Length: 115
Length: 111
Image (cartoon, rainbow over all chains, first blue to last red; front, side, top):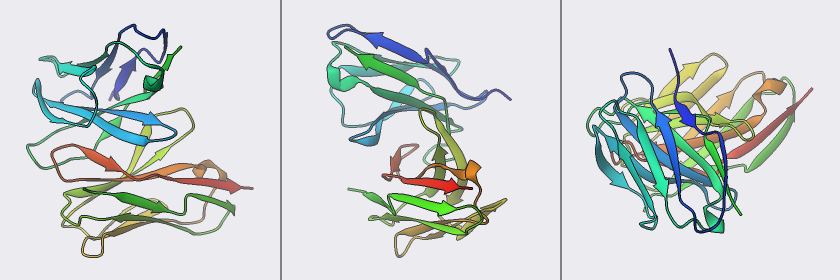
């Protein structure tokens, strides 16, 4: 059974550019969540999508956005990149059965470096 | 606001020791608690999930307990091995599938 797949694994971008990251969840999972991990702030929740709808959002500026497609694949976009956006971006998938949380499985992450 | 704390922040032990990692959370109204391990530069691997109605879960040499009333969980690792070296993270959920993570315990097991 395939796990959570994130692409690309590594990215180097310049300040002011935008970037799109992709996440393919485990087959059958309908919930996809995104997290940012930095040495200073640890793991912070960005947003969660369930059945193509954003169900929850963390405290990040509007430059961070996402979407989910009908096949549950998700993308997140960061516009007008800043140096502080350099981080490991992790995607998690789960069954997402309403308000009952279920086990979350993570991808290997995308390492974004902004120069 | 939910806050999750893990103690100790780092731990270095010889192979074979039994270990206890601690996780504390401030709001006891959680749906579940999950333990993960993370190897350097990699994603998170799920170790154990404890539903709010459960008291503990076991998988191989790992045992995790949950005491909601006191806001605590412990991860017990029996007979530690060098391959157990990693950062261990606990996370709680209450609102949908949003996870709130602790700061992690960095474990090193030396031969």
